[in-house]
Image (spheres, one colour):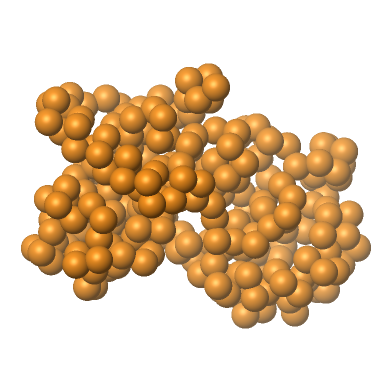
Amino acid sequence: MVAAMVKSARKPARRRLSPAEKARIEEIFHRFLSEEDDPRTELNYDSPYTLVVAVALSAQATDVSVNKATARLFEVAHTPQDMLALGEEGLIPYIASIGLYRTKAKNVIAAAKIIMEQHGGEVPLDRAALQALPGVGRKTASVVLNELRIEPAIAVDTHVFRVSHRLKLAFGKTPDQVEAELMAVVPEPYLVRAHHWLILHGRYTCVARRPKCDQCLIADLCPSRGTGARVPAVPEPERHRR
């Protein structure tokens, strides 16, 4: 099943790995699996539609802030039809605590309208149709498709970008480059879950300023351990805090 899913993902740029490097990368993800066998997003949702809305709202915002907002929002607007009835001005008070809330409110309502008019009220679960929705770019679509186990995509946010560079899994200067490199080197059995493992590792252990190397389950496999290694910042337009 994973093999079929991989065919639908972005074709990666391959790089040659030594047997030792392949074994190191395999062990990294094996340990992640041993620690958490079914990692999931920390955004709260209970349907593909609420997932799309939550992920779209999380751009340049934290999961915690989004969950606080959607806890109230989803009680009154749980479907595209509900959201349209709420309207842009009705939506704003629920999400005003989230960055870029006016633009996001406009996009959420516009997307709900398209879902109702063009998709019968059901969220389209293929990449092209998802990315055609207002406010749903490649990263949002990747998070949704990966979370729902439809496509083993790796959405590169600030955490994934940082961890990938510190672990020498990727060397790209942009999220798209890092995504392609990760898709090429992560062993196939781990692809579906790699996105969440890397995010969670970056959020709680391999943090930006003072990585917690003494608490890291893969510290002995990390070339940057104890070096205070700095990584290039994600280009500003690409930032997506999760």
